[in-house]
Image (tube, helix red, strand yellow):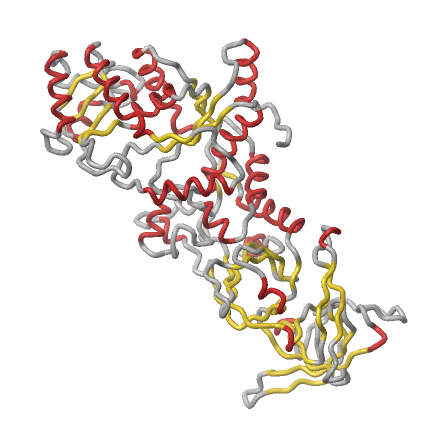
Length: 555
């Protein structure tokens, strides 16, 4: 792993190891299995797993499955796949539900210590009693129940004797505390839902703030690395560990990843999926790791992106162009080049023999010498891009036009002689001649030709579907909308364009879903999992250049 700068988290770990406080560090990545991981999670994965690896420590994968309402084994499996796809391996795998029995006993211990009580207040009443940051709360009328009464009621809650939502278990701390999370927080609620792992064994479930610190302690996590939204509740995290006198993990917060033109909240991503704004969690327009993978983004590009943005103590928004540039950098080095024509028009070389086929050495990747060359067939009838020809071209149009000479990549110089049109005056075919002395695309007399076109042979290409993906949102901050509008009003109507009957070279028939390449002059593409032998589908990963800069200038 590449050497990291000494950010504030690494400096803390350096000091803890140097002082002898810890001989080995242990971190964890603790997602809730209620959705698919997104690019924001990638930063946390990279941080927790990467730091553990760097310090020769351990990192656990733990599923915080304390809320059975929206959790599912589908998400568990997807999270495992995504972590492995990013290139990380966990030391151990755990579930919060592994510790439900222990959590219950620790809750009873707090009751016995006089530090927890069963409360009958409704959610609305609880909110009223809690007060505000500028105003102290007031004690629940149930706060002074005896230890015996609280134990009896809590055990009855566990047995399912009370209706859902009718009672909670709360920590007894200080309703006048200026730290809001210490105003008698909830520890358990009644939730009569089957759990994806424990079935109907439990009808009470621990709240996140109670469960999370106990999970960290049980696994002896030395450094609990999480994002800044957990910072206000750190006093509560420490209170539980201190009062129970168990292993004390250290919670350290860092800035979460906010990305322009992107929504990175599972709640909003679920809305996009469930209301059919996208085709699923792995839609290539989604910022989910499965969506990025399907789009053709490599794990290396994401890791490089996470490395560049680093760790900070204050939240900020990262320009999505930085991620896109990291994707381009990676694919430029690794993606083989392919000739394809997205909007084909036939080009007939009138003086080229009709029965002749010759092969030119095609450089597979100019950035990677070891990729070598492959033979590319050239014939009398070819296809070029329709927008590479203009019948009345302006002065600075350096592609094909009547009487203009251009270079066919790796092949010959050709000159347009005529066009064939249909009854509606649409150009159906371009006729040209070639100069046989310009094999390889260079003129022996040194004449200058500025235009170079890619092409495919009519006899050695086949039709495919191409899906041109773009940013899902057309606003830099999709959540910043007019009053009454939600974030879906910022969806980019041009985020997906499907074009059919594009043409690619025949050798691509041998490639499998997930194969990533560069279509010359058009961008980076990958083969979609929906592809079949009868119908191959290519997803555009990203354009060769940042087209959004031009859009911004023209606004």
